Structures are given as structure tokens and as C-alpha cells.
Length: 365
Ligand SMILES: *Cc1c(COP(=O)(O)O)cnc(C)c1O
Image 1: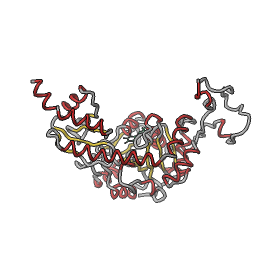
Image 2 (image 1 turned 90 degrees about the vertical axis):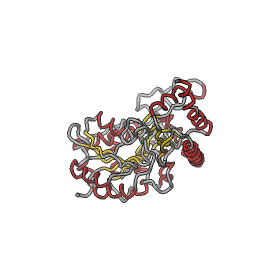
Image 3 (image 1 turned 90 degrees about the horizontal axis):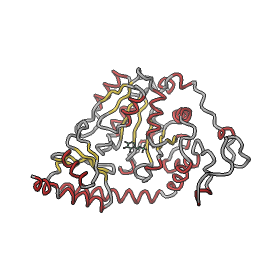
């Protein structure tokens, strides 16, 4: 295949777009009389301590303070980082930058995260789906055949995969990165903090110009409400995303709180360790239940569990105010529920409720 040339992958008009030039682009100093952005000079309409914030000013459009702090943690350059309003924003920007509506296609490997397909649908992009194998691994020969036949613009890997929970084979991803050297290869690593150290693809960005890695503050960092997603790629790719993003895509409170979080990485690591401990404990307890048929190995903060009658178990759990995710209608996930690892108390509540399942069924009839 041809070597990677970003200009060949981008929609032609994207190359020529002049990005919105914000007031904050023209002067980046902090001192001065700011009469450039039509802000309210008196301050924010807020009470108490909130009134002391500078929320009357537009936030840094490129979030440079966060990137300076994040870069050494991820061992990348700040210019290899794009931050989005959740991972959903870079997902959508990557699609819009590369795929022509009604013309181009992308490749996904179901069962996987739903946003790739939603973003494809919104942008009128056809999907080529190559299912994972029954043990949720990449069907490499089928993927390579589909790439050759359909020439997708983007190939989406999710590793650890949602909803199966497992890391995808490093060898399979490497083969696709090297064989499909003229496609964008995205590895969504939303759950990478829960996987074995050294499995992230972020360390290999300089080796693969077609590689894009997505991570998020929503899972291990416990900051789902902030809506902050990370995208790591070559400087060339990051420049394109910066060019087409909404100018002030990350709100100031989100930026402030993310900066705070990044100084507390050890606290994140301790929470991850606790979740991994609970994952093992939950796994063992679920195994003792006669209604559980199979628990898939997990590198994430959830377990995919096959039950005798998943839909009935799901409804029963809802009736008892224990909410899990019903994946039983998803390809390769028949009779499966996806269960997030909670606190010890939450997991015990789940287990105790499940123990009563047969009992309560018997009294129903
Ligand atoms: C949860 C999740 C995300 C995170 O999305 P955000 O928009 O960053 O909250 C991304 N990818 C996968 C596979 C996920 O499961």
C-alpha cells in the first residue's frame, strides 16, 4: 500500500479551510486591558466564591496549561495532544475531517462502542463491520480483506473493548497499522488505566503517522461530568483537529478542575487499584451463582457476564434498583449483561440481590 499521506485522507476542502480566528489567538499575553472579546468587564453573574472566578473571560482555546501537565504523564509532546468535549468530540471531528458523506466508509469491529456508528450515521458514512471472533479478538484476515475491498478512511479499534472488556491483540493492531498505512487507525483506550501497564499505544505515536489514540477523564479519573476527552496523534493530525474544532470547546471550569486532577495522579492510581481489587472479588462472587454461565476476562472496570436468561435477570435487577447494562441483543453477547465494578457495598448489594433471584421467581409462580 501507499505510505501515509494525510492530505490523501482528508476531505479536500478541509485542507483549505481558514479556521475561526478568536480574539485570544491575536494576543496571548495575560496582562493588559482586554477590550477585544466583547466580554462583560464587571465579572460573572454568580454568588459567593463563584463570583471571584474569571468566568467572564473566554477560556484558553488550546488548553495549554492542561497539555503542559498532561504531556509528561503520557510521555508525548503537548503538540501531540488534542482535548475534546468528551471523547465523542474527537471521534466526530476525525470522521468529519476525513469522510465524504455518502461516499467514504469506515471499518468497525462489533461488538464495540456505539459512538463510532452514531457518528458515521450522523455524517452519512457507510460502515464496514467485521465482527470480532467469539472470544472478542480481531479477525485479522477478515479485517485485512475488508480493508483491501472497501478502502475505509478510518479503522476503529477499542482496546480494552467495550462491552467485552478485553484488550485487543497488540499483534493484530500492529499488522493493521502497517498494512493499512494509508488509513487512519484509531485505538480507543477509554479503559487503558485498568489494563496491564505498557499496553497503551500512546508510546508508539512517533512510529506510526496513521495512529490516533483516544483516552478520557471519564472513567479512571472519575471525571465523567467534566466532559473531557484526550486525543493523541501526530502534530499534523492534531493541527487539523484544532483547525476544525469549535473555538472554545473546553469550558473554563472543566479546564480548572482537570488541572487540579492532573496534580493528583497517585490518587487516580490508588482508585484504579481499588477497582481492580473489587473486580477480582466481584468476579469470584459471581462465579458462585448458579444463574451465571460465563464471565469474560476483563482488562477494564466492568465485567461482561453471560446468564441463563439475561433479560429476565436485568428486569429483576431493575425492580430491585440495581441497574446494569443489558447487552443481550448485541452481536456475540447473547444473554450477556455488562456490569460496572462498583464499591464493595454496591457489589455486595448486586450479589445479594442476584442470590435471591431464583427464590423470588419460585414465590412468583
Ligand atoms: C466511556 C467510553 C468513552 C468515553 O467517552 P467520553 O465522551 O470521553 O465520556 C470512550 N470510548 C469508549 C469505548 C467508552 O466506553
